Each structure stands twice: as C-alpha cells, then as structure tokens.
Image (cartoon, rainbow, N blue to C red; front, side):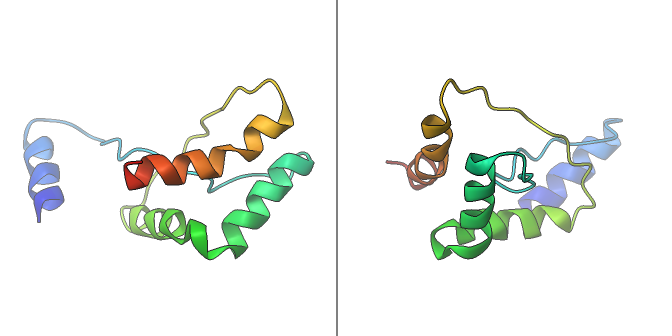
Length: 92
C-alpha cells in the first residue's frame, strides 16, 4: 500500500518514472568464467533466492532494466560480491 500511494503521489506531482533500485546478480551475462559462475549460483543456489524474488517483484511494474557495472581488479573479487550482498541485505 505504501508503494502504491507513493507512486500515485509522484504521478500527481508530474513524475513519469521511479527508480526502484537494483535486482542484484540478475541479468548477468556469460562473458567470462567468473560471470558464468555467478550466473549459475544466482539461478541454482537457494541462498540467492531473495534476489530472484526481488527481481520477480519488480518485474510486476514493467520495468526498464538498465545495466549497472561493477569495477573490480581481480576475478576473485567478483566472486565475493554475492556473499557481500547477502551480508548487507541481512544487516550484518
């Protein structure tokens, strides 16, 4: 209800779009081994179910998905991203 009321208010104020934030790990492409690994984990491991649910929820609003990029210096750092996202989302 809060989101609905917020969207209606913003519409009255003349806004034409709202940024609902990211859906972490979704939309990963098979570019290299590291990204393939993260994509596989996102699609197959229960631990990332919350991210899949978030993506499904946001899909209801007919989003315009935009790519966001993460800069990292070593493939090992990219592999740590899912764990870090989980810890942040749990408030740890």
